[in-house]
Length: 388
Image (tube, rainbow, N blue to C red; front, side):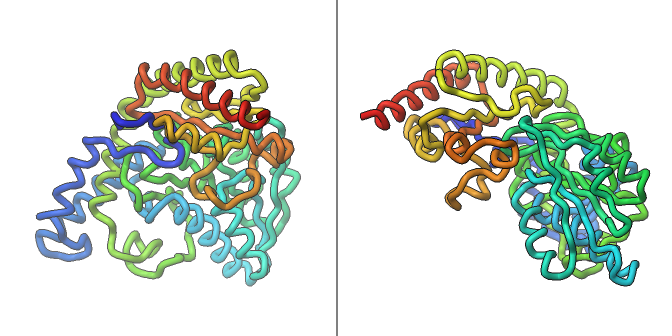
């Protein structure tokens, strides 16, 4: 990352050297299928199970077998939501068709809602306040006898707001409703614990915490039955397909590194974020910090710059060697304003000027100083072009 300044860790994070080194044997001589009974297969199986234990420690699972390996965070979310809903529909002879989620979820959750609606499943979208926070009591009010699932993300990918997961989980448990949380953005950045929170399902993604792309995991509390999206005997019949051994190993090592260094990393990242925000707000007039009064991820800042187009700003920063984003990478180039900022009450004209900066492993003090030079300069240049 020496040739450019990477401040887009919420989009994807670089693979750590320790992760890459751990993966290499399983891309070469240790190529066995973990379902095979011969020695190569059993070595692969042992590696997958060791990784499962490492992931279980990061997410606070009671036992490793509560971890299901998937291809990504999106698949983990879809497996949790559709797996629960289809199973509830089957067991209730079609009466439990309702679920609840928030208005600021990841795009994949919104797409699941769109796909399930014509199939007879009804969804309630919970509102958020101006800080992007869900009021847990709105969950209680939205529950119905036919509600099968509540799904609310832990940390928002655009503004970083942290939701009251423990409180929402308790309400769901009291009412006999399963609760899923998307912890893709929070895993490895702040402490998470499925057991302590009382959640039933929890999603993470490898490439958000310095593991490779193409691997994720879903925590499924023991005793919960899912209708699989991909049929097969692997992952205890919960997710078919030959396991991605090398990437599972990489995810396991990344989780182990996150567990061991979480406290120090979070403190350093928070200091970095606070200095960045203070510097930008002081040097760039007409700037608003989104969710500044809410509990947030220590690495995430979302600025709204008046009279600036966010996409144009991202391009200008890129030309200066700084990588950031105007929103989630999965929606880049789609057009339109952020559904998250809209739900928080921002007008499209204000949301248009969004810039998300997300830091992580590898960022340095020198890079912080460069960001505090480059961002104000690019904003000023774009504003001058608008006035000209």
